[in-house]
Length: 169
Image (cartoon, rainbow, N blue to C red; front, top):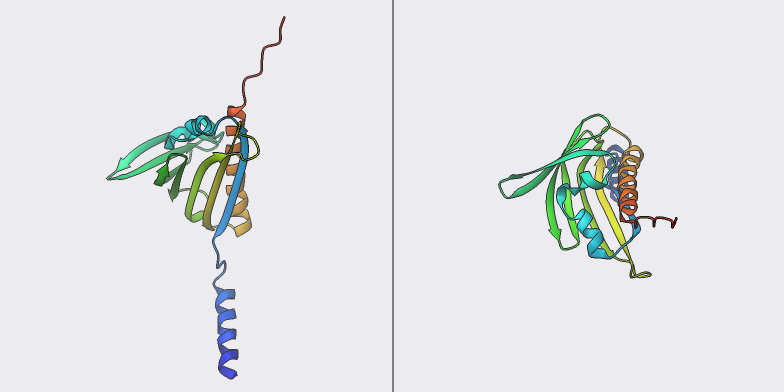
């Protein structure tokens, strides 16, 4: 009985002293008008993020051996984020952050599209990430990434909206 009690106490002490024991997840999605492959054509190029994310001023893609990287230049302060493409298929890509001013580490994300089951004329766009906070609290880091994803998804939806018809004169 005493050994079990010591084991439980040791485990509790380990959890308390190790800080955040679990990675943070951010999972965002939005439905946008348009067929899935039309929407995906806006997103599928690794550097197309500069065309749809309001915080990105520029994107430069490069190869290092067999690996593909992008360096994003931020509009606000000209800072940069270096990301590595870790996988892709016909409707998704995955990447990880290599260098960044964002308060995250061990960051890995996926952007993908799928048909909207409720409306064949719409597409659901997903953007998910897993990471650890770095230099900020878990809540602060989660809010920053969540806000970045929300701004990007809203911008994609706006770009997917059909142009308003010109009123007859």
